[in-house]
Image 1 (tube, chains in turn orange, green):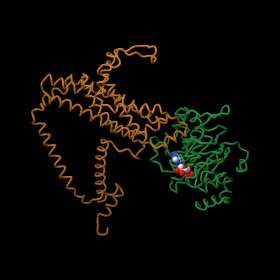
Image 2: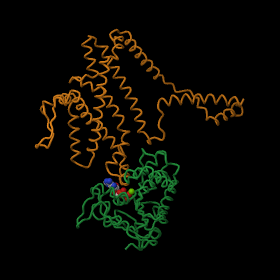
Image 3: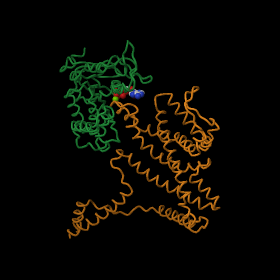
Image 4: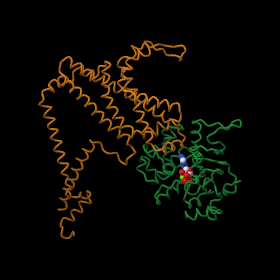
Length: 327
Length: 264
Ligand SMILES: Nc1ncnc2c1ncn2[C@@H]1O[C@H](COP(=O)(O)OP(=O)(O)O)[C@@H](O)[C@H]1O
Ligand SMILES: [Mg+2]
């Protein structure tokens, strides 16, 4: 078969040097893909056209107000709300999950009750509730022995500002959801892991911290990324109790300038920007916790780009080189 | 009573005393009055059909399972309980953990920590439990890796190791705690046949160094050549217990004979 093929020897030498040439075969035709791609492109084009030509978007106003200092300040508030609430949510969620799974019936019940209550009522109601906490517990809250002497007092109205009320409401609510996510993660880890650690003399808390939770992370991270992104947007609810965050600031600007759409566009662009940043962050965190779960970590998109380019080039240039010497 | 069972160590002190142990899972009785003595330096092999309670017995020895009745002591210390003024007190978590430090265990499914490299698997407990410094732990871990023939695999994650290599890392991990007793639960049952030999070689070498071992195994060659005693379990009781070569060559009970005829 190779006898009447003068280039066979050259090909073999080439294959030995740089690996076999990839198979050249006619691809399976997938007309459906092409049609759907064209339809999608059409929609994108229509949308883009509308964005550009519809004067109501007021792009010059958007450009002007995108970095307006009131908006920037409000963004900080939104970010702070998100970060604080998520910290409370994650720490609380881990605690609740561990309590829920513990052999101690008191803590398991307490955790169950907490989750039942905070998942069972709307976060907006909880927000209003915390904002009116003074009405519930009085202007002064004392700390001390229950039904006994009290050591110090807090003034409810000055301690629980709208901002702290929002952080508390969003964070405590989030903890209930996070606890279910963390619990699922913990349960996903093979029991043999805890047994192996126990047989080495590790204690329960240490097994949880060093062995189980790091492995549970692979299951915990993706939905947690979801929760962070969701929180970024849910934090806009804080506007109802007068926290000046991104949505509230845009709303105020609208009343000031009698222009609605450009400010909604500004707010949306910022939300989109931060969710994009968060998604990228999530990708790298997931990669970190994938350690040891696959033989080789997948390359980052950046590495992929670099490698494809390099491979392509070296393969081409080495092939040319070898062909030259064989000639 | 069992002194004559260990010909090369007749008068050694008792390492593990299992005394009339009963255990049920729900309605299912799994151990029905098991008694057994293992002496210092002895390699005691547990054989028997699947479901006969071998793993359960082994797991009771380091209190991964609680016995329903009977006593187990390791080095004259009751497992899982304090004995004070003629009463038993359940041990606190912390004391159970302390007791387990000196009892190494190797599992059928290796149970290496997948998020840690081979070296990290080995140094984890010495650092976290014994409070060793990282430098000391690493130096010792390298010795243990060498002992199991895996010096070059320190940086590999478990998924990057073959089953036999994983099991040898698991042995090294247990040895890093400098245990006085090693429990093996079918350490080669999950391995491809050609990988069994490497693990058995490590275990044989460990036995020769004088380690007290209880080994649940289906490797009759190992039981005969390395084991001092063999106990045959069936239906939650020890049917036959004696000198390894004797039990395997000339089993006395019909059930033992039937089982050995099947595994040979
Ligand atoms: N955690 C458990 N819960 C319920 N049943 C169990 C549990 N562990 C073991 N068993 C049962 O106990 C019996 C003995 O199991 P095991 O000790 O693993 O046997 P062996 O190791 O000899 O194969 C089996 O019937 C098994 O199904
Ligand atoms: Mg078993």
